[in-house]
Length: 50
Image (cartoon, rainbow, N blue to C red; front, side, top):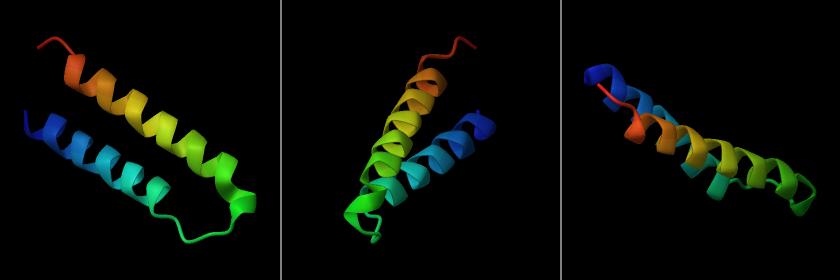
């Protein structure tokens, strides 16, 4: 369970970085991709069967 919690924490940090990135709009597609990847990874982690 600890590994899952740490994995979710890392994915949430990635999500936060994607949302609050201070880079200009030229990086917007990269931020959106990072956001999508983070949401997908969290969904997989949360829905994993024990």
